[in-house]
Length: 257
Image 1 (cartoon, rainbow, N blue to C red):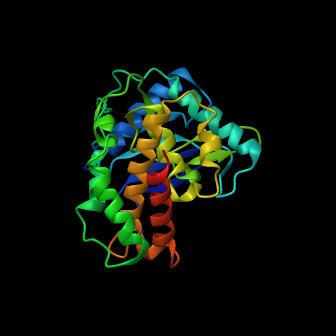
Image 2 (cartoon, rainbow, N blue to C red):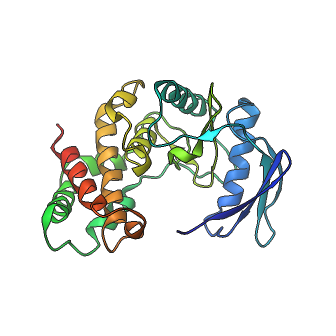
C-alpha cells in the first residue's frame, strides 16, 4: 500500500507529515481546513499550524473524536454522513488558496481504456462497454462545467468519516477540489469501501442532477475496474474475484437507462 502521509499524535493534536507532496497536498489541506473551520467549527479538524516549506511538509491539527465508519454503516450513521456532506457543500468554496478551478475527471476513466484489454470473461466485456461509452453522451456532459459547484472532499473512503455516536466528521483533505454534488456522490457510492451502501437510496437524499450522477457513477466505476484488474495498483490488496465483481457492477451501470 502507498502511504501519502504519516501521523503523529501529541496529546490533543495530530501532526501530519506528508510522504509525497508533488501535487500540492499539504497546501491544499491547510487551505481547506482553514476555510471549513472558519465557517463550520465542528465538521473537520481545527488547523493549528503548518510548515509547508519543510522537507517533509507538515500540518498540525486537532484530533477529532469518533471511529471510522466501516463497510456496514447503520441507518443513524448514514443519516449523519449525508448531513456532514451537505454541510461541507454549504461552505463557500471560491478563492481558496491552492484549490484550483473546476476540472473534469475524464482522465480517470481513460486509464482503463488506454490499458491492455483483459483477455476474456466479464472483465473483457466491461472493458469493451467502457470503450463504447466514450462514443455516447456521458463524456461530453461530464466535460461541461456543472451549473452548481461545491467544495469537494474527493477522498470518500468511509474510513475518512468519523462517527462519535451522534455525528460524522470528515478528515483527509489532501485531494479536496472544486467539484459538484453529482460527482461527490458518485465518488462515494462507487468507492470500494461503500459496497454495502444502498447507493440509489443514499443518492436520493440529495437534490442532484440524476443524468449527471449516472454519468459520473459510470466514470468512477470505470476507474475502479482499472484499479482492480490484475495490472492495476489495487489488485493485490483485494480478494480474488473483486475485479470480476467490479466488472459486473460497471456493466449494470452501463445498462441502467
